[in-house]
Length: 282
Ligand code: CO8
Image (cartoon, rainbow, N blue to C red; front, side, top):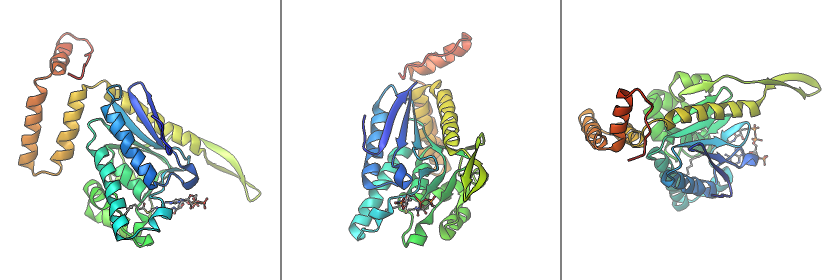
């Protein structure tokens, strides 16, 4: 598939979707948001795709937010439509039956942070910076950030991040549960700034290392039974919005369903026969 602002690639059952507007640090304009929706729908229906990874093309940015040039023109109607368009795409990611990993380097702000929050797993480079700067622009997060951030890090921390607009570095993001892991293999390089030599992290290498870590995680997931992955994601994602009893009912219903699959028999037999399973998504 070809897109104006995305690079869509599939290799070894993993679809990598690169957000590609480096001149504006991958800020999300309406075209990009629409394209992300199309890309996720395409990856979800493609039987060859088992895991999806989002990454930014810019060395120093995952996504620096919604495109402020467009936001500046909003009126009440288009503001609501823009918010709903972004929320719908975030919901499609969150409810995707295939695992979605955000491979994050650099600035992950506003709508970019909200995009990452909608993914199932977040892997960050040590140069990652998170934040919700919207209140300083006279708006509020509108792509689901007010709802997903407190669910992930708790109400107090979420309010602090939103109200202060302070940036959260990768280490802190890991400590509060905003990211699953931080990749620390940064290489350094020498640059000359203001006539002085300085040693700075090589951001291109950081980005590559984050992608490598995401691809390694994806390859572990690819060995698991696809229907189990789908049911597992549904049980966790939907279950979180239910009370315990309803969530347990959902889990046992899905467990019953999964017990009817060929892959369930294959998984059990493979263990008993001391071999690796071959799952068929049936
Ligand atoms: N939108 C448009 N352009 C951007 C954005 C953005 N979000 N972020 C960066 N850019 C542009 C800059 O304007 C600059 O363009 P130019 O080269 O033409 O001047 C270029 O990218 C490079 O950026 P900087 O020169 O500023 O790079 P720095 O390294 O100096 O700074 C920062 C990096 C700190 C990330 C800085 O660019 C910045 O503060 N960006 C804005 C971050 C922000 O506020 N994001 C939140 C946006 S609001 C949002 O996301 C709302 C989501 C919900 C919407 C709901 C709809 C109703």
